Length: 345
Image (tube, rainbow, N blue to C red; front, side, top):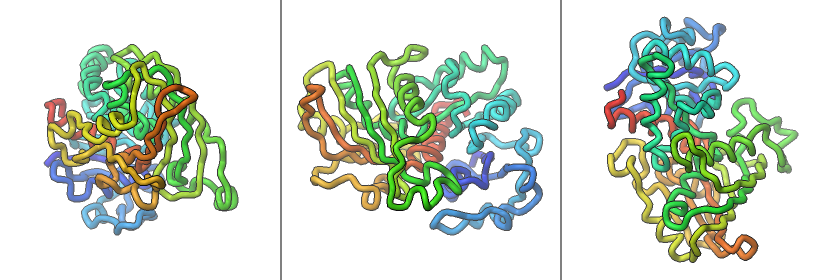
């Protein structure tokens, strides 16, 4: 068992890391770190547990430590759930000290020597950490996962890109309130409402998708137009996607290549990898967050309503993914499993 530490352990994503790591066959939680006001207190006494599952017994008596390498001590893997405005220098300090840092924050996603890894989609980008270590003269590394909307979108796009090529994408998102963290969006703002703006979300969706689906240091050249909306669902982001493909695509073949898609995490049989990363539904009214967000233990995306699009002379579909699992903590954990299986950890 490898020892792991969670930074920002009391927040929503930090709690999701702890929930998903409880009982993991490869990793055991050794350290939980949070802000100064939390330090020295047992995690179970302080954390305001917001998840529907009980707080794991394995972490209740662990004392919260400062967010420093010295306080965290000897662990093999660091998961960062820190706010992006705090994460940058903290994650660098851990990497300098030799830690493998798997970050959910956006602080380093656009660094040209840091991979934005969605393991089934661009696992080959992992090798850039060799350059990262050499350039920055550290023995550790920083690996980021995408923004939640990007994680869902790029997983659904990968088999289409491989089979047909992509010229242009238009995507409109309907994003769950848990994506805003806690306390998140005020109830009076979101009840009986849709909020057609999420700060920086559209920009992230565009540049991260191009980086993930491109080659190392060469973003994909297709154009993306994004519109992001906050809606009153708890978990599960829904995205409507319109694609102009390079080769003519028919709906039957698109559904087939999506349904049979597997990648390196499945071939390696990684613990968190869903057996079927893209689940295709054929009902007129699926996917739905309430019914489909836990597909593949929350790590698969669900695609439905695959049909022709006359405006772009391509295809369109709806995709759903669990934003705090596939789109956040689960994606980081899967990335770390991949790095362990390939000898980087």
